[in-house]
Figure 1 (cartoon, rainbow, N blue to C red):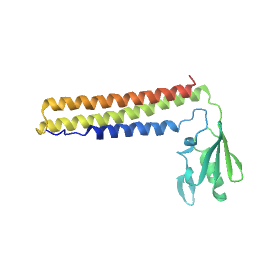
Figure 2 (tube, helix red, strand yellow; figure 1 turned 180 degrees about the vertical axis):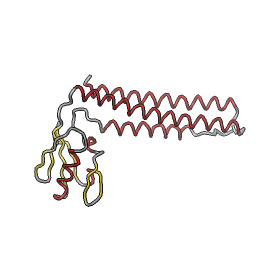
Figure 3 (spheres, rainbow, N blue to C red; figure 1 turned 120 degrees about the vertical axis):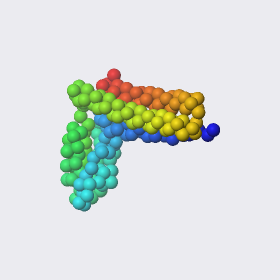
Figure 4 (spheres, helix red, strand yellow; figure 1 turned 60 degrees about the horizontal axis):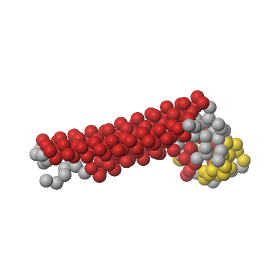
Length: 186
C-alpha cells in the first residue's frame, strides 16, 4: 500500500518553524552591529507604513556602528523617529541624509531579558513543530480507520514522524542555546 502521509512535507513544515526562529533570533541585539537589527522597523513615509530597508540603505561601517543612508531627504525625520520609537535602545545621530547608530554595550539586566526572549522564541518554535507532529499523527490514525493503511504501517510511520520531530526540536534547542551564550557572553 502507498504511504498515506508525506514525511517530506511534515519535515518541510517543521523546517519552516526553525527558519522562523532563525529570523526572530537574528533581530535580537547581541552587542554587535547587524543590519538585521533594523529589519522589524516600519517607517511612516508617503502616507503609508513601509519597512526601513525600502526607504534607506542600512550598512555596518564598523563592528559597533550602523549607518542608515536615507534615499529621500524628506524622509530623514520619519526614519529617525521610527528608529527611536522601536525600543531597541539606539540613539540616532543625524548627519544630512546619513543617520549613524552607535551600538551601546548591553547591561547585564538587558542581557538576561534578551536571553528570556530567546527562550520564548524557541518555545514558540517547539509548539509549532509539535502541532505539525500532531497533524501528522492524526492523519495516520484517520487513514488507519479508513483502512487505507494497516496498524503496523501506522506505527512505522508514527516512528518516522517522531524521529523527524525529535531532530527538529534538537535543532531548535541548539539554535537557542548558542544564541543565549552569544547574548550572555559565555
